[in-house]
Structures are given as structure tokens and as C-alpha cells.
Length: 340
Ligand code: ATP
Ligand code: FE2
Image (cartoon, rainbow, N blue to C red; front, side, top):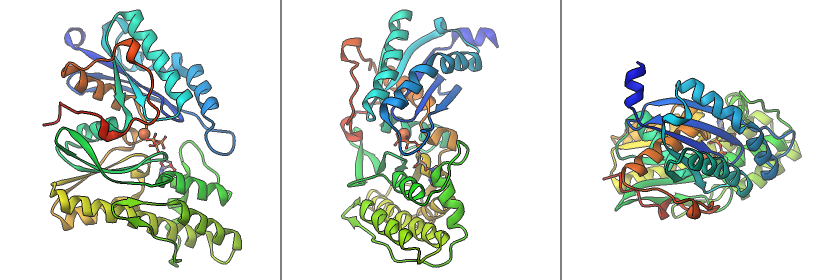
């Protein structure tokens, strides 16, 4: 066991784009040896970037230590350090980048800046064996339908305003619901929605391949305040409407690209109703439905480590002087030469 490990190459990946600080360790062959996630829970309201960054700075050394312990390797065994370079919240990204730079220069090993959205797709492919999927990536900060074409992951459709997960979270907060680390707001809404029966009409906004959720959120919140409908029915109607929108766009991307797989990822991928809707369109198009296990669907360091490996094997590295964070780094700006 020890001997095999000594010959392996390892990458440590740091994720810190938003409310999670996470460290993952991957071998160069895609074996994930550790994936430690520390989630910041704001006392009330949404995430405050500086408060989340403070959490990341305070928890970094403990999370790193746990990751090395879990992987049963030492810092000196590492070959490269990868980090989430963007997109994300400035203070959070900068905290992760600072830790990554310090580690890489201390150990004298290369640094690889990774695009967070690319990493969500790559870990999904690794964990589900999908080869060339249409991906629906739905989280608190992103709503993107994408597929690979001519060297990049192209964006086929996306939100024009807030992300789907954020829409669910804000609605839940307005409704005075309570979230725990084991049960995020989206999961609380899912539980209530399962008891809903009446479908209340809410604005359904798909423009071409893009979606808008903010008008719908305002409408649902106004109905909530009026108190005419049961909360269960509003949760049900909210879910049915927003999930139908992303399913419509995903189906169109599938029909257009004629890909044979659909990959569902991001924190909202845990939702069973969304899974069943995406599975249904996959089946209609003779495509395989793949869903990322939730440990790897939420923000995690393992996805950064694995994408760092893929990039590094293509000769990609990020010199320290070019390792500044990119708050609005779009998925389709990134060349992915490891995908053929
Ligand atoms: P990103 O930086 O990629 O935008 P994020 O910081 O939002 O990610 P994730 O953990 O990927 O983090 O996603 C969190 C979102 O997932 C939250 O909006 C949360 O409410 C939602 N979510 C979690 N579980 C469920 C569920 N069962 N149903 C619906 N939404 C869920
Ligand atoms: Fe993410």
C-alpha cells in the first residue's frame, strides 16, 4: 500500500468561491483520496462575502490537516496545487488563492488555476463515467446548460438574472423557513413541495435559450405575503415552474446537439423532482441520465484537484504573478484541450 502511494502523483485542490471552503486530494489517475468541506452558515440573511472569507481563513489549516490525514499523505508528497481562480465572490476567492500560493511556493511545486464551472463538469464526468454530456449545472450562484464543442464547454442557455438555487433560497427565507447544514433551503422547499397539490400560476420566462427567475420570485413572494395559498402549494408551484424552465432548455440543447448523455450537477441536483424531470427528457431522446453524487455536486475541493490534474497533464500551469482571481470568469472562455 505504502509503496504504491510513493510512486503516485497527487494534486491538492482548494475550493473557496462562495460559502464553502474545501480541500480535495486526487491522484493523477482520478482517484479521490480526500474531499473535506467546511460550510459557512450565515447567522441570518444571505452570505456576506467578507464574513465567509473570514470563515475560510480561520478554517483553512484545519481543513488542510484533515485532508492530508484522510488521504494518508504528507504535503511533501504533492506534485501540484490547484485552486478555484473564478468565478465567485472576491474576498472568498482571494482567501483560497492566498492559501494555494503559499503552499505551492513553500513546497516549490506548480500552481494551477481552475475555472469553477469547468470543475463541476469534470468531476461529474469522472464520477458518473459520462463521456460527452449535455450538462445542467444548477446551484446557488449558477444556472447553466452547456455542452462541449470545438475545444470548449459552450454555454447553450443560462439565467439572465438570479440563479435557480438562489431563487429557492430567497423564497424560503421570505417564508421564514429554517435551514440546517444537513438540510439547505432548497431541500426544505422540496420537502414542503411534496405535500403541495394545487398548481398556482407563476411567470414562466424562457427567452430563446436563456431563463429569468427574478420576476417569478417576486410573484411567488407576493402571493406568500397575501396568504391566500398554502405554503406547500406555493413551494410545489415554484418548483414545478422553475424546474420546467431548466428542463425545457436542457431538452432543446439535447435535441440540437444530439449528445447521448445528460449530466445533472450543482447543489440543486440533489432534488428528486428535478432529477425525475431531467431523466424523463433524457429517456425521450435515448440519452443516458447521469447525476453527480451530492458530495461532488456541491462545491468541493476534489473537483478542483481533478480538473487541475487534467489541465496540468496538458502542460497548463499558472505562474504566481498570473494567479490573480477572476470574479467573472465565464465557462466558455476556458480552453479544455484534454477533451477531444
Ligand atoms: P456555486 O458556487 O456553484 O454557484 P453554491 O455556492 O450555490 O455553488 P452548491 O452547494 O452547489 O453551492 O448549491 C447550493 C444550492 O443548492 C442552494 O441554493 C441550496 O438551496 C440548493 N439545494 C440543496 N439541496 C437541494 C434540494 N434538495 N433541492 C433543491 N435545491 C437544493
Ligand atoms: Fe459551485
